[in-house]
Structure formats: C-alpha cells, structure tokens
Length: 344
Ligand SMILES: NC(=O)c1ccc[n+]([C@@H]2O[C@H](COP(=O)([O-])OP(=O)(O)OC[C@H]3O[C@@H](n4cnc5c(N)ncnc54)[C@H](O)[C@@H]3O)[C@@H](O)[C@H]2O)c1
Image (tube, rainbow, N blue to C red; front, side, top):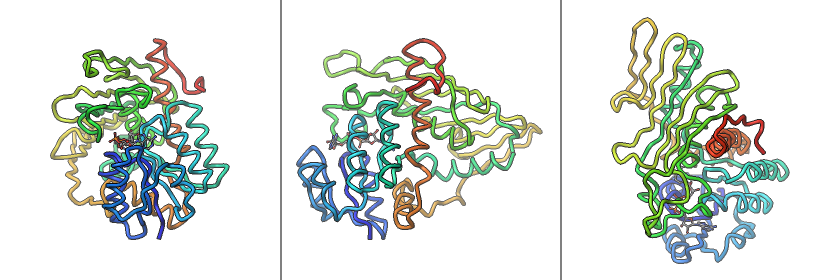
C-alpha cells in the first residue's frame, strides 16, 4: 500500500485526485492539508485521513510515501521541491510552476533526490488522444504539415471551490490567465500527438470580458491566440478562451500530406480521418474504453509508484510544454516571435 498525502483539497483534489486514489487498490489517502482548516477537517473526516496543520507537518510525516499537490499555481514549485527533499514522490497539478526558473528547479530537485516528479497533464491519457496518436503514427495522414488546436470554456469561476474569491483571476496566486491555464494542456497535447516540440511562438493575449467584483478587468488574460512552429517545421495555431459561454470546445485538427485528422470536432465521432483520396473514416470510440478510473492520471501515477517506474508525464517533459507557454506569453508582451531557446 502506498500512503498518499493531499496538499490542497479544492475542486481538482475533490473531483479527481481523491476519488481516483480512493478507487485505486494500492493507494491509501493517509493525510490531507488545505490552508482552509475547515476543508482540511472535512476531507480528513470523509476519507478517514490525518488532518495536518501545515503542509510541512504533512511532509515531515515519514509514513507518507507520495503527495498530490493541488494548490494554487504560485505555490507548486515551493511545495514540490520541499516534498521531493522530504523524500516524497510528487504528482503536481498543471501548470507545473509559474516561471521558467521554477520549472527548472523542480526538474533539478527530482533529479537530485531521485524521487519521481509527475505533472497532471492528463490529456495525453484520454483514449481519443491515444487512438489519434496511433492513427498519426500509422502514417494515415502522411507527414504532418500543420495543426489547429482549441480549448475554450466559460471560465474558472464556475469551477473553483471558493467562488466568492476566484484565485484564478488574481495574478499573485495564478500568475497566468487562460493562455497558460488552458494553453498548457494543448501545447502538451501537440507535443504528445506529434512527437515533436514547439520551438517558437507568436501570440496575442487579451482580457476581454472577465471582471473583478468591483467591475475592473481581471489581472490576467482571458483569451489568447497563438501561432507555433515546431522543431520539425510544423506550423500551427492554438486558441484558448475563458469567455466561451456556449458549448466547451476542445477540438484539434492535424493536417498532413495525405489527409486530415479531426479530434473532438464532432460530438458523434470523436475522431474523423479524412484522406486525400476522399475516403472518410469515422471513429465513434465506443470500443475504446480505458481500464483506468476517471482521468487515468492517478492510476498512471500509482503504476509508476508500485512498479518503481519513472513517469512518462515527467517534470522534464512537462517543462518542454511549459516552454511553449512561456514563449507565447513573452511574445504577447513584446510583440515579436519568441524562440524557446532564448528563454530563461
Ligand atoms: N489537470 C487539470 O485539468 C486541472 C483542472 C483544474 C485545476 N487544475 C489545477 O489544480 C490546481 C488547483 O486548482 P483547483 O481547481 O482545485 O482550485 P480550487 O480553487 O478549487 O482549490 C484550490 C485549493 O487549494 C487550497 N490552497 C491554495 N493554495 C494553497 C497553499 N499554498 N497551501 C494549501 N492549500 C492551498 C485552497 O484553499 C483550495 O482549497 C491549480 O494549479 C489548477 O491549475 C488542473
């Protein structure tokens, strides 16, 4: 049995980490901590876990083998590094951290301590994406030339546990807006699907609609449009938004020399393969059930821990995706193309 500590008991912990650990036969939710003491007590009581008074107390408990870090973005780096140095394996939520140097420090700490660092980039595990990658690797659309990927929803104020005070809109806690909150998922997905790495970015970010309670615009962007180029010379666009007040949009299209692959563009057929010859193959994905619970992130993590196998969704690989986000943010600020190699 692997003893797990949960740090941050808000929405993502309550809808994903905790229930998925609860369903995993190798995991014991041993202890919990949230800076909201009442929440710590409630979650501890519900899952028969130890409530801690601070995350340091949780990390100092030698009974705990690994932690899930589900706190606001600005604290990911500090807590992850302290956890790794306390001898815990770390699963940290996305976005990995809020600066390039913080991401690098987390990767270094994992290397130095020999402990696992995994980031909650679950899009790589979705059955539709796994199948899409298999189709791309089979050469069905030839060589990839370009892509278009989207992530649009109505905003985090409809998600967070603390709806009165939305930390996602506060630059000190969130550091980023929609560009990184949603864009990190899509940059990571493109890396996964194409086995390629985004090398440069040009982006525009805006705060178009979200307001603070006093009516002033929020501190961070609520929309972003990016143009990327990869190491293999593929070009593509990414659009992310917190102001999509209709149906959520998580569509991606990959264009190749012999056809196109449409992912999540049609509610009936999550994957549509359109060949240059005119042939169209629709995948309804009904036969592609995952054996994993929920998002699969916790089962994947638990397999790493129980088999002592380094995670594929490692800190180092997530850092590569974060570089695309940092390049896009710098581009939006400076109004020029930014290469990831110039970041630091
Ligand atoms: N993988 C995904 O798809 C996904 C989805 C949503 C959120 N997230 C990420 O998960 C993290 C948490 O987001 P959420 O949606 O659960 O937010 P939330 O507001 O619902 O919950 C955050 C919780 O963390 C607590 N907290 C904040 N800072 C803390 C600290 N320093 N120490 C202890 N507790 C602290 C808060 O009291 C709250 O209970 C964020 O980094 C977010 O980007 C990931």
